[in-house]
Amino acid sequence: MAGITLDRVVKRYGKLEVVHGIDLEIGHNEFVVLVGPSGCGKSTTLRMIAGLEDISDGDIRIGERVVNDLPPRKRNVSMVFQNYALYPHMNVRDNLGFGLKIAGQPAKVIEERVAEAAGILGLSELMDRIPAELSGGQRQRVAMGRAIVRHPDAFLFDEPLSNLDAKLRVQMRTEIKKLHGKVATTVVYVTHDQVEAMTLADRIVVMKDGYIEQVGTPMEVFNHPVNTFVASFIGSPP
Ligand code: ADP
Ligand code: MG
Image 1 (cartoon, protein in one colour):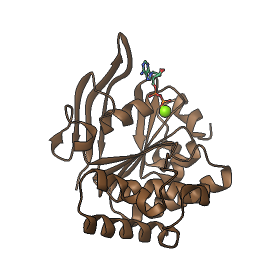
Image 2 (cartoon, rainbow, N blue to C red):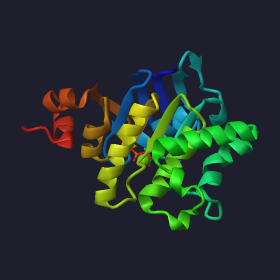
Image 3 (cartoon, protein in one colour):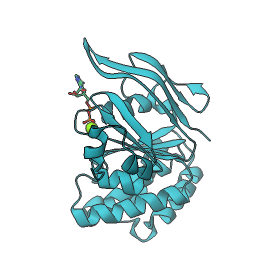
């Protein structure tokens, strides 16, 4: 059980500040989408939550814990990347279980968790295939399965669908939403695609130039944009 809190979080690369002291509270089990134009700081924010980037100032909490100084593996969050690099020589079963094996989990736990994830994602019939024998959507599901087996407090997605064709993208959106229904967990999802944000999110966080412009449900933001930037980005009627 863990929400995520960002408290005046700043990111600087040398002298260049790219995230300017943002505040955000993400509830346990909430599906929050960070959306905004390229370069506005979405990935940086997600990577700071994951522990892949240090924060320059402020605090990040996952549940009750301040995680500022914890390495990624101790934060109990799982990141799903855009380029879902699966191990090409391993079958689906071994791809799903590999992270747990590296973490030293007993074989029985690995077997149970892998079977559970495969069930959730509809991969049970595909366990003996290697990635080359899978469709793009199936590979994406294996990538999500690798996150699920770790039983994380939160899933972090960075534009996971942007390499897929339009039809598959729509299909995978539905699958990700279903997944969130089945595996009750907190999700932080980054996209530059307004439609994706509007369809997936419990709440959307609209970012611009390292600031949060607005936070709200898709309908709140669509119907009551706080400024012209949000209105034009989300496509609200003038
Ligand atoms: P987004 O994901 O919204 O497209 P990013 O978080 O990747 O944006 O980048 C935000 C800003 O930080 C951009 O101006 C980008 O050029 C800059 N940036 C990202 N990573 C680095 C880095 N390692 N060094 C310097 N600047 C960076
Ligand atoms: Mg990005």
